[in-house]
Image (tube, rainbow over all chains, first blue to last red; front, side, top):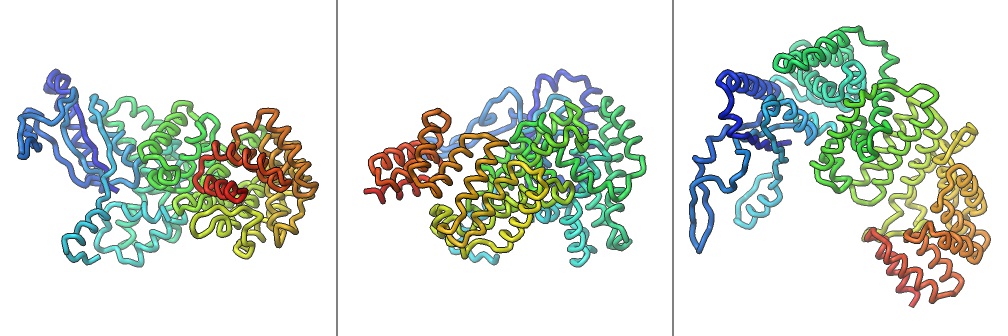
Length: 133
Length: 423
């Protein structure tokens, strides 16, 4: 089953680290990421550039509007997303509880992937698409 | 069942794994993983580590058995492989965590010990059950942990059955594991002095799981089957009279499942049930187990409840039920497990053999004592007896009181129907 893990970090804390501290953190985190890949639990993931690089789109007054920056300003910033393949929720918890990022004060929000299969099938039927299931 | 699903999500199978081999390994997983996990828990002293290394061992089997062939004794191979995987895992963790280093040294020494003989392995399952049902854990944690670690259900399956979110259920398990770790609860079968009390806790968890599965919904009904499986496992490991009695009780209650509700989901009381729908095999086995437990003369509450269920099961119709025996059995049950609910059940039985007047007297005394004021079944039982005595106004009042307290939808509809019938 797929679980999405949202990694949050404190930017000021990150900026306050020395270069060697930062390198140590990267080393341990990447090593663990490699372990997740090797053991077949990594189903995808990306780091994110800072919130200042974000552009948010939304609907306003009958058309698309944009703002610079993220949708929600949070104290901790979203630093990356990991798609985890795990047997169940507790297994996902077990895997992420061992991620070195946590020891550096990073936060992981784990959410089970939503199952849209039924909704998608219904939609395909409505749109007249053939589904060969 | 669930373990097959777990297995399917293992790391993508290498292309050279033929269907046949994959199926063999899946069967092995289904039949052996419970036992293997329990042994690994003893060897490694840590649930998480045991789970992780066991699954890595099965993954290793998928990788190496296509070339090397299936070992003659798969179980020791898997356990041995898991031990080495665990050591790898510990070393990996220890590299970046100074605290883990001491733990690693300690565990490596421990893991290097030669594993014990075959007989010990059955004890391992018992150890795991007793640990999962340890009184230091909150009751809901005991239930969740037992279902996941002993029965192999996934967090999501358990959550669905208990109507909570997977995150909520996951928390119960995380907390339970943390308590085991923090309090250094040993993975042991309690010694003779404690065994009786601790066994009581285990049986309570099993029966709790069984009762959760009482409703007709498939996800929940599965829990009753799981509880029965657990009961059988326990009986094989610890043939105590109350274990026998509990299994008998569960089988006898389960035997009535098909007759308990109409296709529309309406509740059907025992006296109205179509007895041809009762499961004869389960009744036969349930009665045999109950008799065995009774013969031991060291039985307790579960055995007595089983005996009561057996009396019902042996009656070909509600009318031919031996209510006198049932009344006597409730009396005996009260002696070892006094409770207002048991008093109520006895009152209903008394009404059946001595007349509604006698039963009503007992129920009224119970209600006056204040113990069952908020128990809807007390009021519905009272209503039923009043109805039989022709005291319709009182019957109506009691049904209405019961309706104000009832929570389950199927029971509500039943009571409303009874109320309608009075008019």
